[in-house]
Image (cartoon, rainbow, N blue to C red; front, top):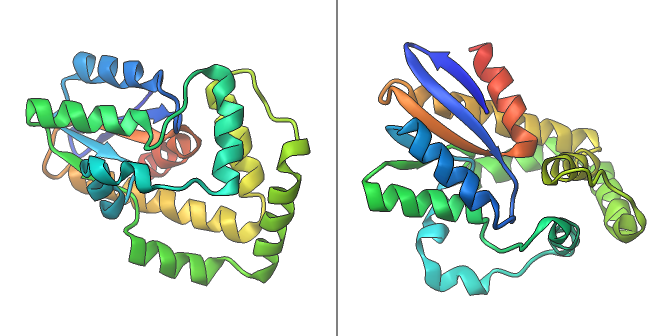
Length: 204
């Protein structure tokens, strides 16, 4: 976990692994230990609304890439959708009255950034990766190393790298903004984006 001070506020950035049920324990321990004033999640406002609506969880259909990721991650334990780390954070927030705030780009901003940065050749490269993913080997030393290696390969094309960098900038700015209101913030960020978000906050 990285801690960053912004305007006399502390932001504790905890990298979490998407989908892995055992991450719930990590989140519970962090909330108990840090007693944050608010929790930031690396989800959009639309995704947070979906997290709050349990009746729609079963409607989510995984893409082929997401299915491949889930299959690999099952080597480390049970995998669920939506991401258990975020579900646990929302449950803890609701039970204790902690604000839970989305820090990722909303759907409209993401779509605009995607259209601006991702070109035809980026999509061709992504398609080639999708077709060959079952034949590839990934770093399986830990769930975190697997998630980071997966992200590195999925976003190998320049357009996708720039898109993820834009997400990191947005999340860093959102956390800085939270510091104008809260003194002790716990930010749960997908582990593959956590270091980038912390680095950008250090420069703010």
